[in-house]
Length: 89
Image (cartoon, rainbow, N blue to C red):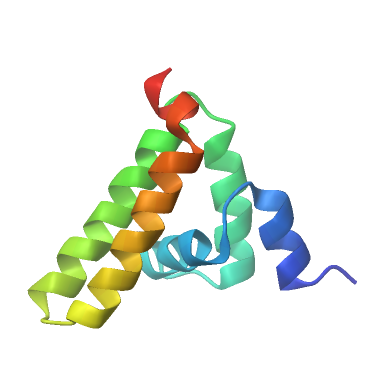
């Protein structure tokens, strides 16, 4: 049986990025890993992921959850660093 860790490793994203997608789309982590992998292979899919994480940050800030916003911001920074080429395409 394939584990969540296996799905995350195969997705092209890290765990915090997957958790942000799961939060944004109200999905289980396994489904968010599949969605992330799918989007990374779509034209402008990385831009879509970036916008979803940014939305999560705005939502966390709006509800005053600064600790969660900080975690999401770190996930966004990591995503931007790791997927710069896809974002510039």
